[in-house]
Structure formats: structure tokens, C-alpha cells
View 1: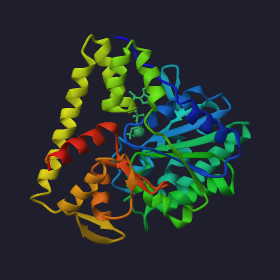
View 2: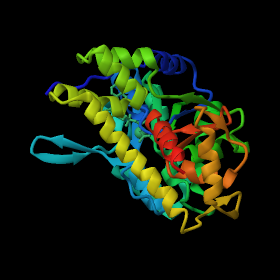
View 3: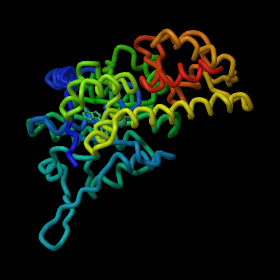
Length: 360
Ligand SMILES: Nc1ncnc2c1ncn2[C@@H]1O[C@H](COP(=O)(O)OP(=O)(O)OP(=O)(O)O)[C@@H](O)[C@H]1O
Ligand SMILES: [Mg+2]
């Protein structure tokens, strides 16, 4: 079967490249609804970067992060050099740096390992990373640090929340030292809302939205794989420009299947999930934590929120806060803190909301 290639994202790529062209000053938060293509975009930009950039990319998605040690382990990569049949460690920072270009994780050698892990002190790890980045700069190259799914360390504590230590470190790397570019991606919009309202980050970061494709981009994507105008219209009606969903439809098409059947199938699944959630709320009353206080999630308020989407695609984040928070947590709604709005995570979710609410 044909491989599906990376599509478009010209505007976002231009924006990221423009940031990389300048001196590092702000932390860049890459956010957007789930499955909008954030990780794919980051990986694509990294692949295309010229040699002068040395990228350290860490994806925390699949990591189990219960403690500080887990986080430190996921940050660092033990660097080993294959030397003929025997394996020899790289002993100095200079040796390490000379071999890195685009790496998953921060390379570390034996010399620094004990120091970094000593005493549960994030500062040890951070000062090592600064040394490493300075070495990269001394070789005329620009370090770039990318952390995907950062919200996974949201609850990790070392004398207080690790995330604050990390934000301070990012500010140091960018605004203070202008040493490295820092990109942070997250699909958790509640985490992003916390970041957005965090006083220590105010004026120290920028926000880059990676949204689902627009209509023209979607049509070009599908057209490239032989979808007819009717199939494209149907895909747009059901999936909007959600890349992951479009990829599924393209695979259906390439496999000789009927696009319409696939659309109806995924729609049915989403409707059923949403109906099930509303039914459950008739029996249980979940709680959510807002600014340290527990609030109840009332089914009737959830219904009121969903009713708003019958004739609108986007609503304000104000009002029924616990219920909106709950629906965001359940990945049905996407919260955009920059705009102060909520909307369904996808066109499919919007349609499912309308279908379910019509029967309530
Ligand atoms: N520009 C693109 N061109 C082609 N396919 C894409 C593109 N962007 C995303 N996709 C497809 O959509 C899938 C989901 O994208 P990706 O994992 O990057 O989304 P994400 O926004 O990082 O998701 P999450 O919210 O879970 O972090 C990819 O595996 C890929 O198949
Ligand atoms: Mg991702």
C-alpha cells in the first residue's frame, strides 16, 4: 500500500523556522486539539533542519513518570560508542557533542552521570544540560530543545512541583542566556490553561496553534490520493480537517473501500461513546478540582453546554466551569486559553454532540 506523506503545514513551518532564525528569547508552546498533527509537524521540521541546528527531542508520551528519577531517566540517553567489536564509552563532553546532530534525548556520559542523578536535585541535571549546550554553541551550532507531552510531569514533585523548576530552567535557556531554543508541545488543553495563567511565564513565552487542516488543505490532501470531489465533501462533512481521520479515509480509499462507509462507521462510534457518557452522568456525579476546590459535575449542566453547540461551533469558556473542565478532560471539548473559548475536539465530535443532544 502507498505510504501517506507529510502534507503541507507551510504556515506553521514558516513560523517555526522564523523563530529558529532569531536569537532564543521566548519559550514556544505548541498546542492544538488532539490528533491535529503537532508531533508530526515537529518531527517534520526537525528532519528538514540544516546541520547548524542540533536538536534534542524528548517525547514523554510513552514514559511512565511517577517520580523525579523517572523524569531524569526519560530526559537522558546513555551515550555509547561502537568501536569495532568492543563498545567504548565517550568520556568527555566534547566527544559527545562531536557526534550529535538530531538525537532523541540528551546524551550523557559516565563522567556526568553520577552528578546528574545525585541528591534528587533538578539543578544538577539542568547545569549539565547548560554545559552540553554551551559546548554545542562553541562548535558554532545552535541547540534546540523539544519536549513533547510535557503535561505528563505536571504532578511530579521534588520539593514542590518539578514543572516550576523546569519552567525556570527554560526561562534561563531562552530569555536569560539566549542559549537554546525551547519548544514544548502538549495536547492537554487544561495543562496549557494552567501554563497560560502562570504568572512566572507571563511575557516569557509564545503560543503556536497547530489546528486541524482548513478546507483547501484537506481537499488537496485527499485529492492527492485520488479521492473524488464527492468523497472529499463527505470527508470534510464528517471529519473536518482532522489529519488522523483523513489518513484513515485515505487508507480506506487506497484499500478499495467505500469512503462513505468509513465515515458513517467512525461517526457511529463517537455518537455511542458520547451517549454512553451522558447516560453514565445520570447515575454518577464526578468531581473536578478547580483552583484547589472540588466541584460536582451535574449532568443537566453538561446538557446545557452541549445544547450551545447545536447552532454554534465555538463558545466562551465562561459559565458552567466544572462541567466544561470535565468535558475538556474527557477530550470531547478543546479549550483554547488564548481565545478563551471551547469547541469540540473535532468536526466528528461536533456532529456527535448535535446527534446526541437532539435525542435528549
Ligand atoms: N501534516 C500531516 N500530513 C500527513 N499526515 C499527518 C499530518 N499531520 C498529522 N498526520 C497524521 O495524523 C496522525 C496524528 O498526528 P500527530 O500524532 O502528529 O497529532 P498530535 O497533534 O501530536 O496528537 P496528540 O494530540 O495525541 O499529541 C499522524 O500519525 C499522521 O498519520
Ligand atoms: Mg502529539
